[in-house]
Length: 408
Image 1 (cartoon, rainbow, N blue to C red):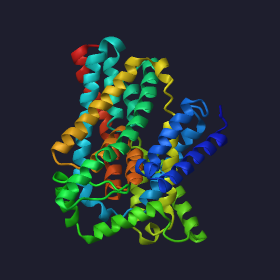
Image 2 (image 1 turned 180 degrees about the vertical axis):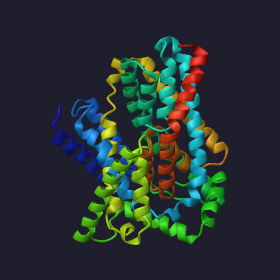
Image 3 (image 1 turned 90 degrees about the horizontal axis):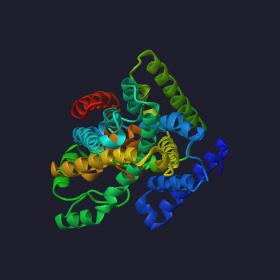
């Protein structure tokens, strides 16, 4: 097994390089997308024993690297180009958060006998993590004094489910692409995505009308953002690269300082705010290659996320915990995609909002970037950050309700 961090980085970099080449040169992998291919390949390599399920390389990619990727991508964003998608994304996120709460509650009622007296604590933690992220899982677990064994088992199952759900959210729009294309052809309209998918007619046609009303400038900005994420739009000069690196490192440092001063506000809130403010400066937003480099770092992060999903851990942590996580995420998916479609929300928005709930803002950004949903990118990050704030409150509420129902 390859354990040296530098060698693990090499393997993950190779995975990303191959995933990008396959996406660009083959129709099948082009439909899957490099993000999904990177996740599945990382999972395959770790579960076959080539690379470990835990590594300092993964810790770095899940920390400074993905933070730098977020900054680089946000530096390409003009806030004016995505404001129209905000209300719909917020509604989708609200539905998804409710789905996570319902899923965790149902799972607790079904599995209480198998898990034991701390089932209500796990319900609170899974509600929190599938509304915000791993930070919320840890915060609620610490506050409820969850036992070490259950805490560790819950994290292992959460990591696996999060990677699987990213793959699911990347795949759902593709699975419905055929039906969507047919409906769009019949109605004479539709909205194309980065992989050629077209949104269903009907409710989505209403969304297209709303987006069109934002004006041609919004469409132009969206198209420009998409290009910035996949090509450097010209050569990268040394002066621009120097400014870009200084801006990224300065943003990371400033967000850490502010996060320490204004604890318990997450530093990622400051990071995002600083990056967005800087992005409104034309000179900085116009830096060549920022989106490409950010996209690459996020692909590395996704490949490491797949590598951390060691299926063999299922045997160690016990099936009931896995069932709990699986049931929670499954109910979340049924609620957000089922009810979301009933109220007229499109699959793109629902997929990004769902990933914001389950995987957090970085994963939401990764999905939006990978599928070319450029007008959902910033709203996806926004609701992901909202999840950090709301996850703890919702988690504690569900834990209290479940405890009242089943005891503990």
